[in-house]
Each structure stands twice: as structure tokens, then as C-alpha cells.
Image 1 (cartoon, helix red, strand yellow):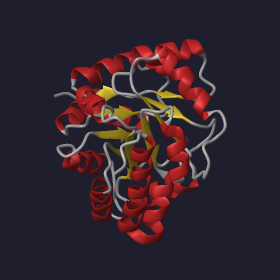
Image 2: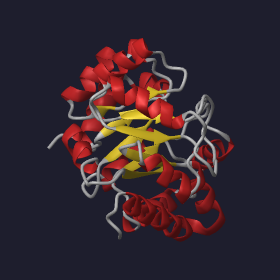
Image 3: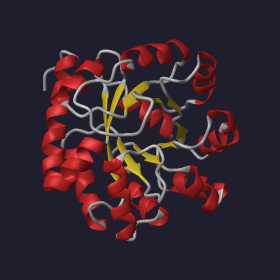
Image 4: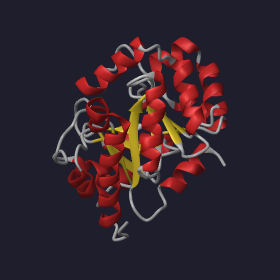
Length: 263
């Protein structure tokens, strides 16, 4: 089963898929494994693994801090792909990686290694969809789905192009800004989800700014998946993987209740 099929399975459970993010190498090389374990125990449907990068332009202060710490800990692309591969047999794993890292490594090599690691999908914040066609097809040939981003500023024409390239899911950015914790669903997020859904056939997941179970519940009415990063990394920093896992369980319960499925 390829990455596309595995992701579609995660989005077909009668409720929004829960997609928690972790920075590879944070709070330590071993600690990141504990974070992934805590997420799976809390009911994560998909793991999103962020590859540390020195210039994470799409990320706010929390993720920037965790990536800086991860780089200090020695986390690199080799480590990140290895970490993703350790968990890819237990859940679909999506890797978020900046294109500069792929370009520096060599596109052919990265594509091959991602496939060998069993990665289900890839998200690339700094790769414009207009320039992503060849890369997306190469990833699909390796069994890895391409998951493009859509933003509130995306035009309808751009959304149509995103829909043609999306083979895993569309990562909807809830705000025209960087990642960060927000207690309420940002204004315009629901409108964006509806615009994207009208243009694409792939599942639609919402990220950037979901910082409470209530916000997740609100997004669940429109989204096929909920991506949470900054809040979880904040909790890992405050109380370790266990605290992040307990909070994620609350979100998981909220998503189940929103779908009428209880626990």
C-alpha cells in the first residue's frame, strides 16, 4: 500500500483525522521518539515530523525555538528520515521539510530515501505549487504522496492547480502568517476550507493556529483533518511528552464527540 492509500485510510474513520506535529530532535534526539510514542498512545491518526531547518520562514517563535534546539542537538536530514522511518510501520508519517534541504541533498536522493523510509507524504512550505509538478510526480513514483499548502490568499486558479497536484491531502493554512498558538479558530478559516473543498477532491486538513480542543471541535465541522504543532511543542517544553499526550487525548475526544462517535 502506497502513501496515498495509507493517508486516505487515515481520513476515512468517520471523524477528522488527528495529525500532531513534532520537531525531529526536540527536546532531544531520544526525546523526540518519546513524543511520537505519546502521540500514538493519545490516538494520533497521522504523525507529522518536521525536519529542522535554520531558516523556517513559515514557522512562528515556538517552532523556531524547537528547531533551533533540535539543530543544537545534532538533528539533521539523516536523523529526521530515520525517525520518520521508525514509526512509518505503525501510522502514516508525513514529513514537513523546507525545499532548500531537499535541493542541497539532491532531489533524486531525497525522493529515494523518503520512499525507502516508508514515508506516506511530504509537505514543503517553500515550494510554490507552480514549480512543484516534476517533484510531485517523482514523489508519487516513489510511493510518497504530495501534500500542497493552501492559504487564505490563494486564488481560485491557484486552488485548482493545488487540487491537480494533491495526492495525499491539502494542508490548509488558517491564517496569512506563521505558525503559533491561537485559542480560537482564526476568522476566515472556515471560508478557506469551503473554498478549497470546492476545488479539490483530496482530503482537506487545517493547520496553523489550532491551540485548544474547542478550536479543533469548531474546525471539525468543515475539515477532514486537524494539524496541531505549536501548542504541542509548547507543552512538550513545559511538561514533557506525557503532558503533550494528555492534552492530545482531550483533542481526540473532542473530535470524536463532534462526529457523534463518543470515545
